[in-house]
Length: 234
Image (cartoon, rainbow, N blue to C red; front, top):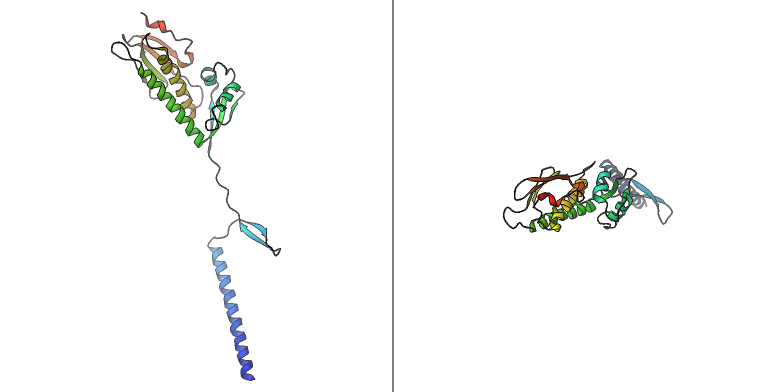
């Protein structure tokens, strides 16, 4: 009887010792994990037994970067207004009609400017589109040729604000428009899309390709109204 009681007592203390050891190890592991910074922001949730537990709160994804582009009132008035776009509000609507991948939302401001907010993707789409448009203007200009050398050519300053062209009155109208209208227009858009602010314009010097004589100097904002094709003479 004493041996049986002793064996039961031994088993009891053995089991008790195992439980104490397990609890001690669990406590040490929990403490170590907390010390290693594994604690995360948590939110309470209910279990099926009605007990309240905590689950980690997932961090929110960073919002996509955006860019605010503002077209100056001078540029809106002289470059962006068209036959049917008579007001800044009309210009803003015209931008939106280009589609959500270009200008998803544009607003006319009280000072006459037009602003839009673009994501990185939309901004890159617009820069790419106007860069290609400007290159197409140059390519079209280069398709025209004089009857005798030298050929039509142009020169652009490093800051993109001074354009010098060598032309004559025989150049086809489409080629005139390419270098004197479309090229400055796309350059202006790119100025603002690349972070430029304030009024933008381009000074243009027109030389006679055959004599080298300067026949006219004007601003891009004055074209086509003030361009005089007869200034080249006979």
